[in-house]
Amino acid sequence: MKLAQKLAINYLRARLNIVGMFSKRKAAEQAFEIFCTPLRRSKKKETPVFAEAERHFVEVDGQRVIVYRWNKAGLRKVMILHGFESSALNFDRYIHPLIKKGYEVIAADAPAHGASEGQQISLPVYVKTIAAVYEEFGPIDSFMAHSFGGLAIVHFLENISHDDHVRLALIAPATETITAIDSLFKILQLDEKVREEFELIVVEKGGVSAAHYSIPRALDSIHAKILWIHDEDDDITPLKDVKPIIKKNLPNIEFMITRELGHRKIYRDPRVVKKVVDFL
View (tube, helix red, strand yellow):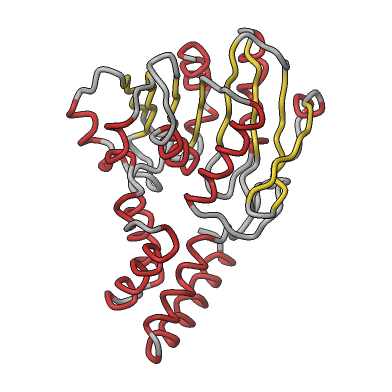
């Protein structure tokens, strides 16, 4: 962790704990704001493949979301979904291989990410974004998603009619939202009373508890064929959250477990790129 990040975390930790001394609710509200606010945007520069893309926009909660499209009217459509504090630009290495296979390729920057408008993102907002793109450019029958994008696409698919014709490649998906919240509270060193208020805010905003935002819970409604790629050394979306699913040996899920790639190198790895493209 860089010095600037450490200083920022120490500042937030001190501020929220002072607020929490006077109001657990206000501390929880501020923690929720932090949870939904990307602290940085991806700094990756556009590569030449993005100069080839059509650029479109959809509106999500009054914000313009950029959508990139290549190879219009391809034989099959695939949508690329990025993770938290990432953007479509980070998945440039997948685009030409997918086009060569005849795909129409669609990618969007979620609100508060990349070239899209907005300052905050939540899972319901990301799901709305997928729905808006799907309505404008769909039907889409193949998806590849990293991290937060994986959690979002699973929650989108569980609410639409689909069958095993749909293919879904998950790369280090955010498997359990509870894990992400636990990590936030550990970093900020907030007490259990603030956590209880945080949970109430989640319910007030989304109508369900944080535990509802879970890939294992949603899998009963997913009929797509799934390729799930995860690394043993992932410290953001830990493999321990995935192991109960692996043990179920579900017939529609194929697992690929890697080593020493962590959470971000994994989607850049040539073996992973080839596996995903071949699977789709």
